[in-house]
Image (cartoon, rainbow, N blue to C red; front, side):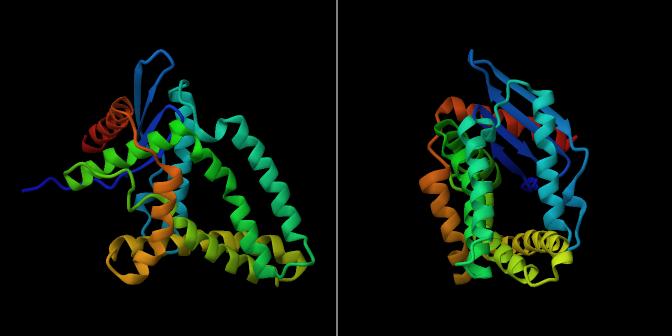
Length: 258
């Protein structure tokens, strides 16, 4: 009887890999002197316990984001991809550009929101462009995919967050366009509600894509994310980088199985 697989997620660092499951996470890095360091912890909050369609998407996003500050405290050698100076500068430029787009009289509300969404993801795209980050991203996918499928997996993974890009841009643009029509004194609250709804809707669309990979619509929605992974966000890792990813995977699974 085959072992039941634990649903895992992950994130690439500039010098390592984070792997997380329903109740635990582990991070492994390669230090500047070549040492492999690993830490594993129980989660303080588990989004996997939330089953409401309205709440489970935002809850699982909050679950993943809540780990990030813990990594720095538990493993100071970890280098997060968005800590690079170029990414921080791009975040500032992106924020200014979004502000200019949203106040442009030459663009309609829908065009403003779509362009704002594209500009907002620019820092994330830049963070993944780093050679080491892209290679560790590939290592993350290979290690998790191999665990899930029982054979050597490719560097692209069907559950990578890149597949959320298309649905999230579309739902965010729609939600913010509708929010822009709210009375001025309610517009901020309306935008916050639209962002929450966009994350919830995008996650449900993504879940449907994963459950129905052979449907033409699911393949069409997944195509941009796959191409993004293949051409920009991942690179073939070295054996040493795969070793780091497998160390994070093993440490996470050890806690999950306790």
